[in-house]
Length: 381
Image (cartoon, rainbow, N blue to C red; front, side, top):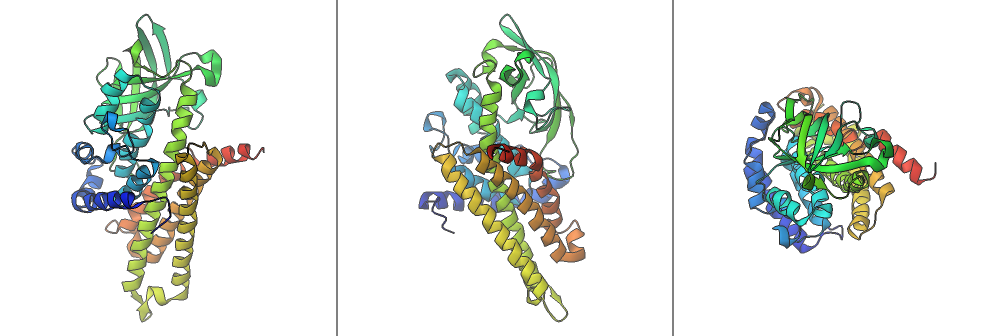
């Protein structure tokens, strides 16, 4: 498919990633879903192949690719049949590490970014708390300066990669009196006294990824672990969230495409009333509707990606892409399950997993309601 944003180089990378997904990931996905934990070798292997650093500078071990390389990775990883694994990889490549690249010191980049791109260190992003999710400004985790250290207290929850992560890009309040302007980012290593993984969460979908609750009790981190500028963390993390949402939208649409392809194949071979399901008008029209919604969502993602890659900050379009991508992904999975009928509700068919996994796209990275609120504000409403 030629959508003008992808070159021959992009397609060559796509082919390599797809081969990796088909030959090295797919044989294990069912077991990883049962284990609720994909194997630790995945990150180092992807780092070895250069997949974690496609759009990072060569100076830090990257391939020096453009933003569209990230879309290629998101789209191909979405075809691995389990939503948790591509989500975990996206946290590594597009959520926890971009702020280090953008705002980190050279020392921080060498200590955290370089090994993360090699898959030698796993990263997670700590924003959500038990009483603060979409409202980042309301987080309660507190960091207080004490000489050459920051002392951190608070809790984080729904943290993807939280169990296995070697470090966390943490959002904390450094000056509660300043509201949005009193938030800072920190890099906190696993094993730092006072930093504890309190439990691994049991999820409805995305089961192959580890999701954790984290506790910080008088956790002392050195002053040089402040990421970026003190009290500018909200603005820094909101910049990161835009890229995260766009990559998430691309992955959601790609997942919908794969679910559609499987449902179409099933409808071609499943016979009812003496004919394949695709020959029944109600099924044919449903498939046509699915294909149309996927294509519309994909084109919105691509047009927005062009702007983002050109250095623009299209918050409204990104919010629209995130909103539509998540909704289309779930709607396609729901219609696909209906096409499978009773078999779709059985655990032996992938469509039930797509149905469960795709529901998170409408919550994680900003709920549908928050996306609508952002869109409304950009319209002056």
